[in-house]
Length: 297
Image (cartoon, rainbow, N blue to C red; front, side, top):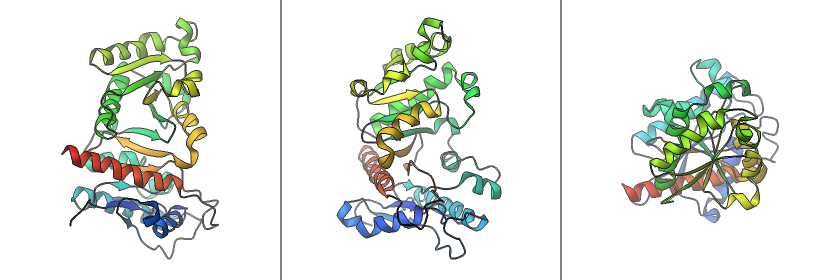
């Protein structure tokens, strides 16, 4: 075919808001100026809106598998995943952790190389640790983790976002970035040495920055992406600033993958009040990344 390859957009769980926001986007696709995309998923006549079950989980999983297959076959330029219920899919596929990990496995990429970034008009953030108890975070943070994942972030900023020398601000773990060891030693023993290593490699990494000021308006212009130490440290500021336009981007994969940064919203599914802004942003961002990668190929 001539022109750019279409994106594969999955409907997610058909009992959630995915199908209705995608339907609205389809009606407005020309006015929105979105890149070409195709919808992947089944009508799901037996899936009840607002009531996830085994059938809706099976539909969501098949859509994800089919979309990834289309990208890997060279028929689509990237995948945009609609929101799913992790618990519902895990009930039928016990090894399922999340769509990010599923995408990595499908590509044959190590899961630790699949780095989640949340991106909006005001901010980009990357959590070093994601879906784990807060009490587990200090034990999971290592020099190696921070160095390897920040390398992935730096490369992706160059290849996927066209930022030649990305500025990466790395947050501390503890209040006031540990305050010289008075409130914890992770900054001294783990985070700061990792930043030193990154800088020796030519990566413009700074920190550890106190997280309570890193996301202030006068600070956000000083970096291109913020690296946080745990889930809420990264997602709270992103959702406070860009809730309706936040995009979940998977960095470090050989394929393009984005997703709206919201869940299935079963409680409002079918009520006509779900906003499509985040899915619109996810489709647009996937198209832009795919175009940049194609230009570099």
